[in-house]
Length: 527
Image (tube, rainbow, N blue to C red; front, side, top):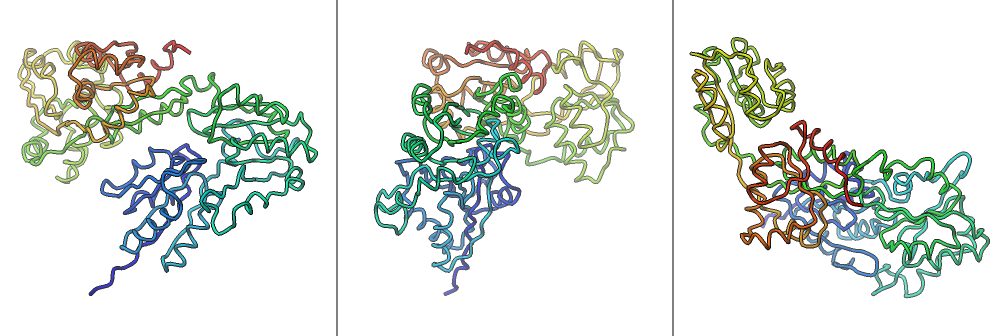
């Protein structure tokens, strides 16, 4: 019998929360892993980088509650690797900073399994940085120490130590002045003891303290006090774990260095925004939202599906010299036309005999990026009506126009051009189909009122949203969506929303993704 080749276990630091802070090596491994074992402090969007066929195993783990206990996690890692799978153990922060990475690496070593450590940015530094609190500063601190806020022996979870040994390892007389800045991880539940012990062993009661909850996440909260007041301060603020506790004079710098959770710099800070674009296009909107402080929640309800047969489109692209105009109505149409041109080994010179019109600046940008072609005509508004109203060539009698587009697109544009005398050839370039793979997660977020804004970038996203929810009762649907703010990219999408009795609180003046984000920023949210 042929022996199965063992896989490798990669202990990957996911960073403190912000998905952009993962390392390039960590991202590379996420994209190729057979199995991903992840905990609650790894940002969910990181899983979007995984292969569609990768096995994803959630192992939870939070203070005082373990969805999967450590011995079971160890068995999962070893078992999958022995079965020949390459396993990414995705851990919040850094695997070796109170992340149990050392223990998991030992288990792999003992089982004869290859392993690799991929460091991550630890919240011990990053949470403070995102709160405007540096752990060192020439005028305030020349050293810092990272200390566990608690060491538990629940069910021998602390490894091989006997119950009680873990807590005895902390020498408070030494810790109190171990460094100018003290950073405690996992210390919320034990904050009273931490502050009491530090004061008992000489730290001034007026020493500044900050608790940073969900550091680097858009839901980050910061409470500042002193050793004497911070316990009551966080109680009044109802701040709970996960949080990093920072003790020292550097905390005073927050007033000057605050940036991430500054509403003036990030007007959408803390808002959870549903992004319903295709999986391929969601990142553009999500990145813009993050830059404004929002927390984008990606639920791509549309999937772009290539056609089985492109012989008809290929034939027309081979005959572009017979056309006067080519009209691209979306970035998807540009992308697929470019793919077919590559397949046919045509370059941009193929378009030399015709003019090109596009709907919207995003489509114009895609035309330049993919084909290095500047559009001859970009209407003022990114809708078909504007294309027709402002068409530069009003004498279309006998002119031939090619429109590669989605199979289910509206007939308004080709019909109007035909009425103007043109001979219009519509070629299907792709289909948009519903993607309801994450519907249950979406319903959970809506039922628990965890979404602030729902964005719709096309009529098909609205239709697929309703279809994915699967709720036919209007009253039930209205109650589910109550409290949400509805945003449309343009008037056509807004009309579709109204046809489903959705309110339109926000509509972009410029019918583009940046225009939509700008409209979200201007909306007077109820605080």
